[in-house]
Image (cartoon, helix red, strand yellow):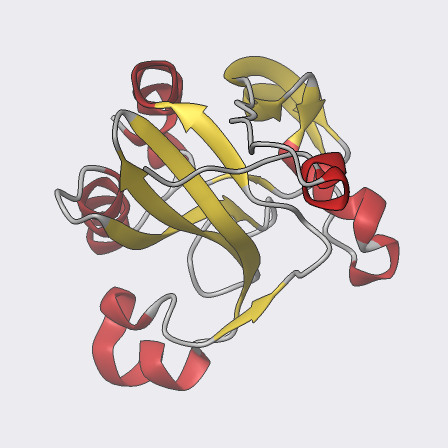
Length: 171
């Protein structure tokens, strides 16, 4: 089983403990959307704000979840559903998108998702940079080139909570 621990565990050579994050999807307005929409909340803070606090100059505040109902392109909708429902142990999942265009061609934040022993781990989060791959492969190119945001720590979620919450966005 993959285990994560607080930084103090490594410093004091204590046995690692599993730190489980809480994930919720709630309806609220965001920085650039006056309309309430689904928002991913991690431990009480919106995901775009979690990222913004570490990367304030990257203009990522106000990014919205990749809400299936807000995406116009049918191929992009199917791609998002396929990635979210993937049976694989590891997948790169688009989690946030630009609220202006609501598509996967503009700025997209992805999570490297790993499934392990009843948990879902976002090992890392980054900005998708797969523009050339997108031209060649379409949506399947997303996640092949990513600028990983190293200041954002890994997050671990209970699989049942993760699936029930994010299904509000991807189903």
